[in-house]
Every structure is written in structure tokens, then in C-alpha cells.
Length: 418
Image (cartoon, rainbow, N blue to C red; front, top):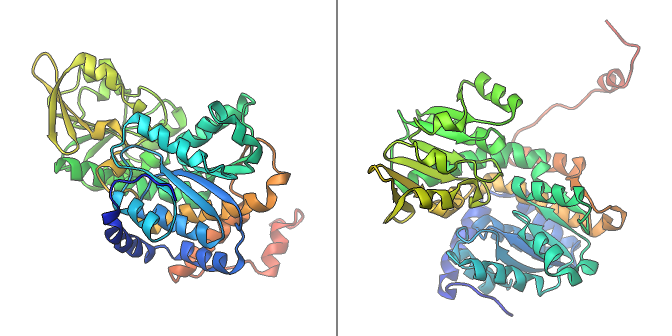
């Protein structure tokens, strides 16, 4: 079996970490039990480009239990947990191509290694795998029945491909599922991003000015958690509806050009490019801390920062110092990569339980129905979304009501008024 990881000696530590994560993933565990009995993915090759974390290992084990043949690479150079990669190779027998801190060439080489296994289903977090298929590995397209996409940034890329008419197989936007973005994006990103910033800096958030760029579901979570820790939260937005919502939620809203002058902490979560630019770095106050929790580090104009300021070195594990000509210092966290995965451990397993349940069931859905699907981006089927919510509630010991026959009749009628 081919693989490329940092250290096989970390496998036992990885096993302990994965076992710990599994204790908080009852939905995925229940799917795994069914998959072991029914083998719905038997003979299907899955090529996955995901953050190599403990929760991802649980997903990989679930897919393998369903009969799938799997190869996995990292979806970000700094998100790999090396002990998890070792666990998957040693204990799960899954080819993994991922090393924390890998350079750009190695990163794309690992994606190519996964594609060498000729997957029938792609599983992406950021759409790098699918993009490489469409740009460099087109010979694989006839063998691919479809794919899934985990995150907002990837869905944006896929919808652009579909709009341009270049998407060659159906994709399921896992991020669109209510049981994904309403929970993973908001509560998972909210907690893990603040966790990463605090771990990296050991700075107090209370009393600080915390600038959140964007007000999508991920940004809402970060704003909420920063406010809960006592920060004065400012939101920047380009969408008037979202900006208005942020105002109603109690945050100050202003352009980034104004916020840049007064922020202590900055975090981008937009899915777009150059949200904080050279002119914004130039006006930041001494000691400003800048981070990104969007999928790609392009949200920060790092080249502009390097043109503006002199590199002062790495002063802590995840902090690079940049010195402006007048002596002010700006601190960039985790090279602008995903702060929650680079400096912390990513989302808690209990919320990834639902996200990866969507991945597993979407893979099963593609296996069964791909012949009926077009070359477009689909949302997760409603019945899958609701089933995951039902399973999660049951695992939490929460019961809900159901409609009476009278209520069903009322909802389906038009002639029953006051």
C-alpha cells in the first residue's frame, strides 16, 4: 500500500485520539453499524481531500465499513494531524498522503496520488481535488459518478464551474445541508476559531476590539463567541441584508477601512480574496493580530503585507511578526491559514458528527442514484438532512412532537379559515 505520512510511530497516539472522538459521534457510529451490515459502497473507490483530523478518521472508517476503497490527502497544508494520518495507515489500512506543514508542491503531489487510485466518488473540502480532475486529470472523468463538497468556499467554486458549463459530473453540496451549516459552521467554527486564536496568542479577548470580516454562518459563530468572551465586536460586510442582521444582533458594522484603524484582533471568514489588503495593514495600530478562518489564505493580502512591512521573524509557534516603517508591529497568525486547524484541533467531534454523517449518506446516495443526476451542484436531499437531525436528537435523549391527523389535514387544506 502506497502512502506518505510523517511518522508511523505516532499511530498509537492517533488511535487514542480517534477513539476519544468517536465517543461524541453517535450519528456517524450508527451509520457505520448499518454500513457494516449492508455494504452499500462495496467496490466503490472514494478519493478524499479533507482535513486529516480525528473526526475525518471516523468518516474514513465509516466509508470503509460500507465497503469503499479509500485514499485520503489533506485539504490544507497546515491542517493535518500527523498522528491521525499514522493511525489511518496502520490500523485502518487506508492510504494517506498528508504531512503537516507540507509545501505547495508536496500538497498538490498528494492530491495527484489520491487521483492515481482512479476514484469513482470524490470527497472534497475546498474543491481542490475536483479542480485538479477538471484541469489536469481529465482522463479520470468517465470513471467518476459524482462527488461531495464539505465547505462554503468549495461550493462557491463548484457553482462557478457549473455556471460556466465545465462541471463534468454531479456534486452534492454537503455545506448546504441544514444539519451542516447551521451547526458545524456556526457552533463548530465559532468555538474552534476562538480556540485557535487564544492558543496561538494567549491574549485576553475581554475588552479588546475584535473585527470579524463577513457575517455568514461561520462569521456569526465567531462574532457570537468573541462577544461572549467580552470583546467589542465589529462586523464588516458587503451584503446589506447580512450587515443589517449584524446590527440587529448588537454588533457595530462598518467598512474594513474604518475597522482596520481600531481593531485589536482581525479574523476573515468570507470565502473571497484580499478582504484585508495592503492599505488596511498600513493603518493598523501597533500590536494588531490578524488571522483567517476561511478555507484559503487568499482572504488576506499577505503579499501586500510583505510589501508594506519588514518580516521580523516567528516569535511564537503560530505568530509571525511584521514591522511597519514607523515601528508598529502586526502579527500574522498561522501564515494566514485556517487558524482553527493550524493552531487548534478543528471543530469538536460532536458537531462534525452531523457534517460527516452527511458526507457518508451523500456518498451512499450517489452510489444509488448518480445515473439520474445531471452535471450540476445539488443540495443534500431533505430526507437525509432530516434523518441526521432525528438521529442526533435521539442520541441526545430529546423527543419532539409529531403532527396529529387533524393538523396534517389543516396544513393541506385551503378552506379552513378562522
